Length: 154
Image 1 (tube, rainbow, N blue to C red):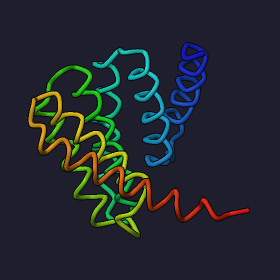
Image 2: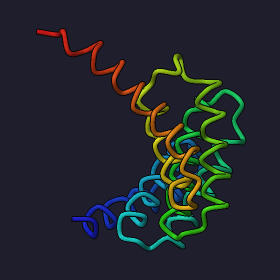
Image 3: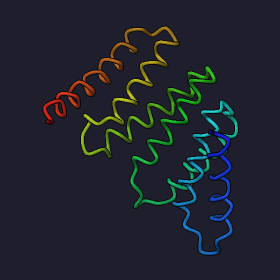
Image 4: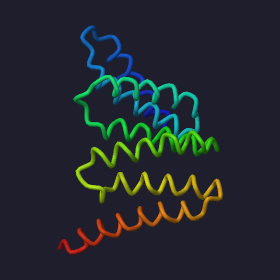
């Protein structure tokens, strides 16, 4: 399944790169998808190649939704976590957290909960259990609020 997705995304990527008046944001989205597929396949260096380029493209545009930069940083942090590079994992996850806190419409957002959970996991791996618990509880509280908000829907 991932091989098929990779093949399709590469076709789109090649077509987008050939366009003379290319839209870099669309190209970045395709590159992001390639990075995610490589991450799922545990081909982390290729995932990084695409995701760091995506991050560069997103940072060039002041009018872009900054949660896209945060999402990219979050994924980069997750990959560093998988590689057991916890220092860099925290660097990118905490950077994503700052973007999310600044640019999401509310702190009680699923992306914020995911980010807190990812940070908590890194702190757990480095045996900073108090920090881990704090972040995991933040994630839990957000998810609990979201669940309560939608649990009354008939």
